Length: 246
Image 1 (cartoon, rainbow, N blue to C red):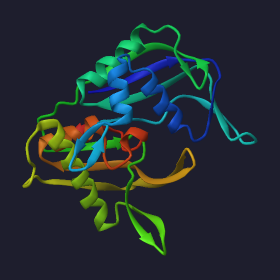
Image 2: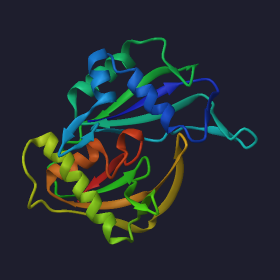
Image 3: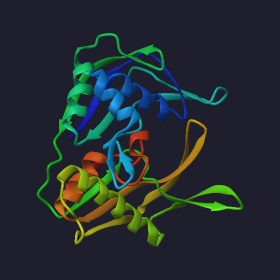
């Protein structure tokens, strides 16, 4: 499921790198305390790795950029898209958003004016997608005693491999079956993809944004739409929106 929450605000002030603020907002507004703690502290485990199985977009709306303070201010409204295939997550977050009249983002009041829901349960083996937040793909290694992060982009062969491997892990958790022979391919649309860099707290994260075509098993396509592509999904990376089926 994917849903876009439309908020009313009044000169909402945020730093230009605000992903950690949105992540905190989402966790804070999961209604059930036990589920919130489980998701925040643990998550869903598979083969020694943990997955939160949700992601979220950048904020969309009219804003003013203040160069001196490196902040932005959304004037009257702002939209946030959240995606997850976990029913408990969706129910507990939507419950708060619908009934809490005292919502705050970055210690400033906001009000839900509407929620648009898209189920994302497709019977297709191909789709055109648009990123709502950058897709980040990386590996880590040790060099001279220091941990080094290597980022991959659509022109790199490992971009395809790591996205598929990550997607299969998520799908195993969701569908409780193996995907040993599953097919998946992601293709950037020429001239429609760019590279982005932003900070999550103090850590630089690099990713790719734009229009892509994806092909493969329908379960993997739906997992991509509902849980995100690539890594760091619960930090606001890899959120994608269906443009059309192929």
